[in-house]
Picture (tube, rainbow, N blue to C red):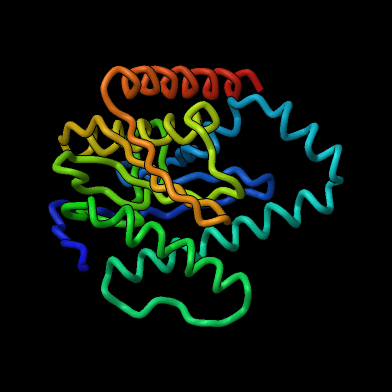
Length: 230
């Protein structure tokens, strides 16, 4: 199976800066001003109680190691999928992490991508002028409907109520794409695979999409007010 590439839009390269505290900013192509990333906004407005309790339970050293391992595995899995979409060789290697990333990517490639009718762009830098920036995995058409699409990894498969931030993230990218390119994307698709190779698609649309759009815009307001008061 091959994925149809249809480059309807010219997506710009956007410079980004990551600060020592982990916050990330994208440079607004319209005026060069720094825009907080979507993930920075979500992190800055989320309840971190559960994360703090987990860190206290396992210790900072182990917590940092787990995060690093998860990030490395996720990045490698994304590379597998990106290369597949572009029709170029996927990463090789036989160590455990590389084999695991390949197996996880295979789940999305064989179960998720066949439903993608066309790809307008992948690893697309998004920005809403004057507000925020970010990067989405895929923009295109899924099951006949224009959609924002992201690949996600999980240690164990999650449920809808566990991925509120992911849904808010989908809405952020949809809003930015609609603002800059004049589209009317109101649908998000998350392709999720666990380390146990369970696969699930989460589709966000309709009233649920509208709810998460309002949620994200409220979080932008909270983030900006918090920064203004700092």
